Image (cartoon, rainbow, N blue to C red; front, side, top):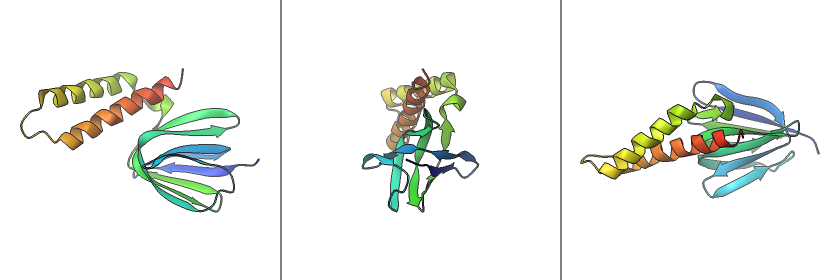
Length: 134
């Protein structure tokens, strides 16, 4: 079947650079898969789990929005932030989830609802990605 090059980068670092067999991305219109020799594609990404298969093993990466660009058998993911599942601190993510839930429940004056909901979504997605490790 072959492979394609996956590059997941943030403003700070390269999170993944690998030859992979397939990738499933969290697109804003729903998940989409990318296989070797995929046609050119540009898509916005939402907060979610990016899954890729390398050497027959599935790996997971937390993505906090960004863009995916497929061109010439290379999938470039430009993310606002990204973390491999093994690098996620589950306790920190759980604490962030609890803080966000508390803020939303209290409905304080001046609360940025959208920002609080996004923080909750990021924390919950990080916890979900950690669960994929088994």
